[in-house]
Amino acid sequence: MTVNIDHLSADELRQLIEAAEHLRDKLVREKLASVRQKCIDLATAEGLSISELFPEAGVARRPTPLKRGSVEAKYRNPANPMQTWGGRGKRPSWFKAALAAGSSESDLRI
Image 1: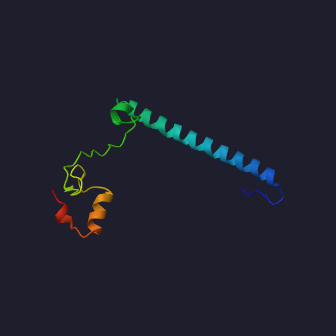
Image 2: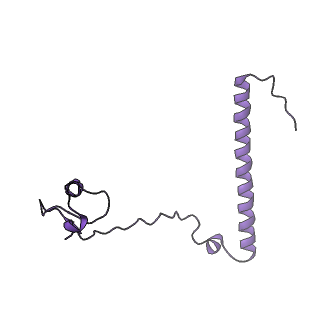
Image 3: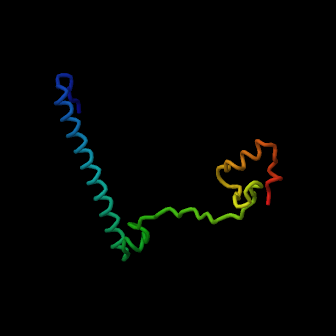
């Protein structure tokens, strides 16, 4: 099929594109419905239901969230013993300041 679109205006081209996209979407929906019905018919002919074939179909799976428990403190601020850090995530400012002042990580360990 050949269509000469050289003489169409911008508005006519936009309408043609919208019509073509609408038709494409309709054809895809019809194809999906046809294949879906064939699957249902085949399953029924075998004495099965779609839910038996695909028990999780239609059930939205949520990703399992990462469970991060609290971690025991590994480092303590010598200037303020109430400040501790477990060694995960961004280094606290007191930890960086202590390293800059000449302390080593082992000096700050609990």
